[in-house]
Image (cartoon, rainbow, N blue to C red):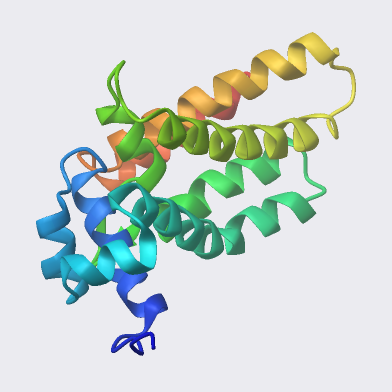
Amino acid sequence: MARKKQYNEQEVIEKATALFWRNGYEATTVRMLEKEMGINQFSIYSSFGNKQGVFLKSIDDYKKKVRAITDKLQQSKNGKEGIKQYFYDFLEFAKEDEKNRGCLVTNTVNEIKDDSDPIIKTELVAFADNIKQLFINNLIQDEGKSPKQIEGQANYLMNSLLGLSVSSKVFDQEQIKDIIEFTFVNL
């Protein structure tokens, strides 16, 4: 007979998500997960398979949390202004105790190596592709752009968002506002 879980899976995943967000995927060990999640290694392997399984559940948790701002972008009818608002909304979303912690996905991308887990890489690319598609959908609303221009601008905005995520961890709010505003000046 299987033993009943002595923990709330959503609560332990939220703790794991916070740990991955702070440390990244590569730097987080199973021992660190045990301590942060408050469950033992056997429970981690039994419930999630391995560290990769915990991370994939954490990415799912992150997607649910970020959905509040991605849904707003998806429903936007303001073209590039909707995307600019997404940049500001993202900064608010990524704050913890008035400190910016960047984006879980960006933080993980920054530590990825050539030999990193291909399943994790695929998940990160899928997340980024979804955001890029939202940018494309909003850029299409601004008339007079060719599909090639829209694709190029969406790529530029993805790069800008990744840079903003990193910059937000070290620059003050006024500098971050300047970065966002200048990103959209010639778009």
